Length: 460
Ligand code: HEM
Image (cartoon, rainbow, N blue to C red; front, top):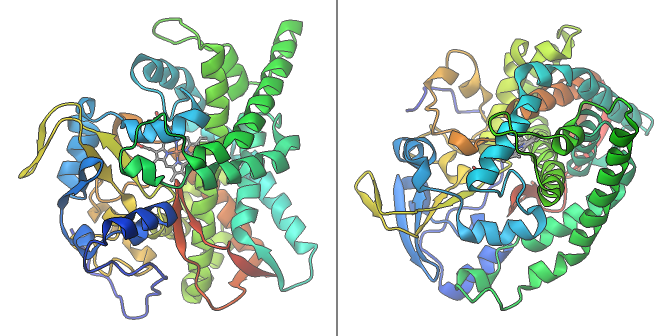
């Protein structure tokens, strides 16, 4: 699958050059803990399926769309989330939706699905626009040309939106605490620990997990307070807000009638705070970086934004170029750059045998830049996602939100939010890179610009 597109003037953002050969084990361990995308070789971007032997055993990188479909959809039962991922994420996220498995996962997903229907998501559009407008108002109080860290600003606005829409503002006052605790948590557990790579026993303490303890203590206290306040409200018989907190506390599985345990409620509060804003923030920040480097495209996007209707719920479907810019940005800089699974039983993917208990990696960072799947894979070309061209893209060659039963529950919410925040920005201000050095993408669970994204803001 490749689409004939003009490439001559397209902007090519900075990305680590793929290595010619696999690095030695010590260098590999060091790179994996610093920035795993720097470990990958040319073969990763050229081979459809690439098996490797590592100290952890067999790891297979799967980048061929039919094989990806088999892992995520056709034979998904055989590929649950793997034990390494669970070991890294569960200390913070417990049995929340992202990290739960089996019946707990099924029950939680069924319970929360009604909060993410297209109708419910559309109801959040007004609050999304209010939060975006308030953020731009704050920028406009500064002198023209003032420098902002756009990565941080996007974390701020997506947290405001999450708090307003899913938590009825119950977490707003804690923003500074959450930001600090979340950054610390991602910096610590988000680094691959060399002890995990070499398969050291779990009783040997990992530095990262030790460093994450203050964040976990903060999350624990914050959740306790949120749950106590909402319980008190529900007990008084007051009309409780129709949000995720009430849904979790009053949960009953539509099929079995069973509710969630206290530990599951707490785990889901943290999961939705973590998964519900950091990813969208990354997607938006990278899009603003790319648009600043492609002024022609930005000018067209500004025009489209200026002509948008008054109803932000409609923007998702009526602004094709802005949507294409976000989708192309998430191709080049997928907010979740890597997904992993463990094979339960032996299987075959194409000509490759997958042994039971081996690890499967589907890395959107690799798949989205794969030489066999994309023309000019490293160039920023939103045209690929414009109506007419987009239909040519294989569903399993583009997976910013994953696929199959574990697909992102917030995908529509996130797309609507990204459209509304970006359109609001494009209508009112222009952001330009504050210095010429291009940001380096670093993988820490999500894909962050190293050192932030300093940009100058000017009114339009
Ligand atoms: C641009 C923004 C986002 C991106 C790129 C993204 C990406 C993803 C991906 C790739 C997965 C699947 C992981 C896997 O299969 O291993 C996922 C799962 C999940 N996401 Fe998102 N996400 C985004 C926004 C959101 C938002 C806004 C929410 C909540 C409000 C959310 C909540 C979740 C949850 C709870 C799961 C676990 C679903 C399950 O396992 O059933 N995400 N996300």
